[in-house]
Image (tube, rainbow, N blue to C red; front, side, top):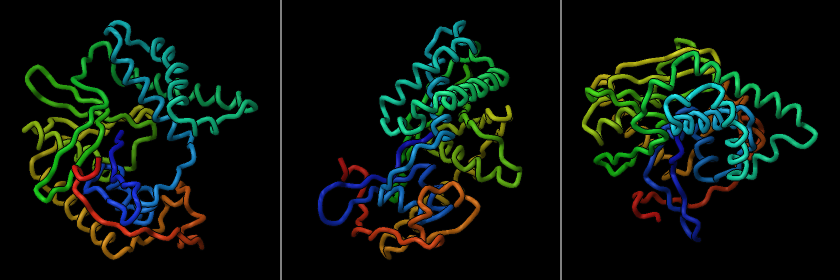
Length: 288
């Protein structure tokens, strides 16, 4: 998972846009520049999505499971952690209260049962009792020569005794069609690039774990792959900067629109976006 994104100042006048990219926001701009604008510049609220929230909950359980002693990392213990993690998540994000009303207790029970199924699949893919991650939910960042900061949060980093690095990311959906594997690996190459630039070591293996169907998607990055990823991200930021300068974030209609929460204000669906504020790009350190 990744949280960092472009952040905006709250004061009057031009809105400060941090010169920063995360895998999610980079993906947003590639898929639909207008969606990027809605999420980053307009900061439109996102309705609670049970599929997305389920992913967040399962991630939280797996993160805390590795805080247990090795022999205590069992499926039973993971299931025991679910109610507590769910309660903590709801306390941290009050908007999640809208997911299930008191009259929807049966729906909530079924939803939690689907989380248990995903955890069961995870335990069929690897045994956490024999793993000792070097870090979990680690925030990584790197500033390229242009001043652009690349930042994200890595689900898990494993380091072997001989120094080899494995980057692991949990996905609660199904594995992608082979035609879209490169797109799925973009996030992992992003992380691998930042780790390489900050640690001086190219990760040996990038591993996506798809818990909905128990599939792995793995990749062994090479230096030329990561250099190409870096060039792509720099070019992507240049395109974002140009969109900011021209105040133009066009909508891009695709099959992804069916999951978008903003169709009512999207011109591709007959809507009108809100008026865009004046913007100015600033270095990351310029925004507290």
